[in-house]
Length: 310
Image (cartoon, rainbow, N blue to C red):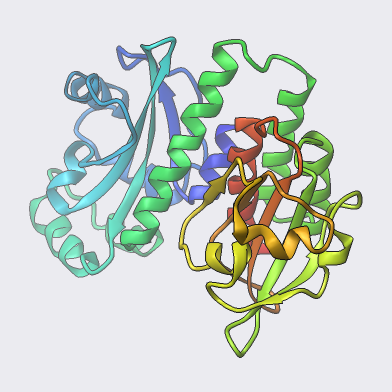
């Protein structure tokens, strides 16, 4: 599981207990990460133990300045793992450089880093460079990862479905399986999601439903075109983040769905992504009143993030 998230975020990751004891091997270890760890004045395990007291009161993922490389401008991220309200462990992710600071990091690295090894400059170009949106995406992914681990440890999903969720995440982030196959497996995992489709943005700015992944619901929606701001799909497309609505029985925005015999009670939509063939967004929903599982809403966001590699 940690390997999948490390690949999704493009960073190295490791989990420790609240005292800094290493619980997992490092996932996503790169040449750059290894070189940086080798150039610390003490083992990275010891430096994490020194930092933990400052972050034990943090209750959500955050960006931080890791270890000695903070002095040169490198960054990391961490996510607390809370189980039944108690700190069980910490996910550490890094390192990266903020967009616009690469040259500054290069200058500081050669002038301020203790015991500087010139070889570090040779691997600096391998360190990920993140802009503001990418940093937020990293924090969002760490939030989802912490939720998945918490769910596992609290025993809420110790069943075949949970194992299949983990396998699907690994498959999706590997980039070796087509999106259509991934999303059909998602629907098999969560039959509570009756409708799942894709809308493509046309040159006019309208959104046309070009693909339906669900077989039992919504066939009449194929080809439907809506202008930005029109109806439920058109309004939802204006948002730049994941959105979820429920209790839609009396919502007039769903009229285009109702006219095509899809009286949605719940609806979700994901932000636009540039994929092969253009700009598209995923949407889904159900005609049932029973709330869709939280795991279904979290998993579709992870699978959507992997779509860019399709």
